[in-house]
Image (cartoon, rainbow, N blue to C red; front, side, top):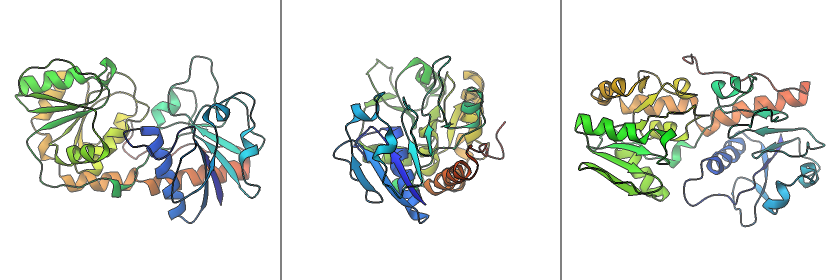
Length: 311
């Protein structure tokens, strides 16, 4: 199958870029499965697994272009990773990486988890995936906990700070603006990919105390690939990603504080195996191929397949 992936970013990114990294991982996964991949992306993009067609991001996301015009003639399907403003004239689907505004539509939209899909009145979803080779697995951990993400109220970083203070744990925070913290809590600011991978590999646990409904939560599987258990809230997709063998899903801060005391009993090997089974770039690519074939054969997208422990 010849798949065209469309992104309005320059790929790959040098820093975090969650959506961008998923697109690159998908290209790699599809190529590994034997499919031909063409990438339509911003100028300067270089992805070895795909033939690149450079396009102006403003043109790609504008209302006047038929994205099908950029597809090679022998391509089978177009897979867009931004909001389509004009329905293409050839078979296409679009991954919805965020939240749609009330009343907004996403023709042939694919969401990131069952919870994300159901909140938008559909059952079509594919879990994000990443390449395990991009992460360092460590079975022996250092003596710190980790929070990785925007230092925004909805991300729940204050819960991580309070939890660390009440359990007397050392906590590293990696994210945006610099707040003021008490002793034992270290703010590292924004870090590059290599530093982030090292921090994930060394952490005793990863805090994901989301106070909003996560569409997916990419840092969660980054922790698992690193052999690091995850302490999460019961919001959005997180109960679909985290099991008791690889972390804990909690409703309150008090529950998280109780869970952090035993989080180290989860085996790093189980965390890595969990991520490879459900959230690798190959698993994601296989799920999207299922979507492509369903679209081409029936004109509709099939319902997503949830993890067996999803609520």
